[in-house]
Length: 156
Figure (tube, rainbow, N blue to C red):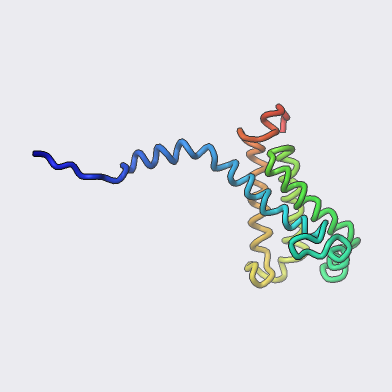
């Protein structure tokens, strides 16, 4: 008489499954980045999610951050975060949107956060640096397989 025992899936089976699912890793990164940027833009532009809206954010950018004219810089930041984030979600004009995010985050690092040191919890540049480097990766890759750029044949 033989005894059979239940065994956990083999490691090679797990690896094979993860390999099949790996095509979803880049879209997950691109879409998540876009979805997480959009609320920041909605705060600045529309006053949603506890934000102050464009006028008050513009006043803050000008008076507290020294970015003049504040309303222009607040509008640009909100536009890039909201509409650039949406573009990343859709994979539409992905590289230009990511260049916008990269530029915005470079301004945030060098004009606002650098004097506060590294850690985000102290107002440092950790968070905008991470977003900027993520944007570099998206610029390099483009929209990828699951994007409107690819579907529409856009050479971006």
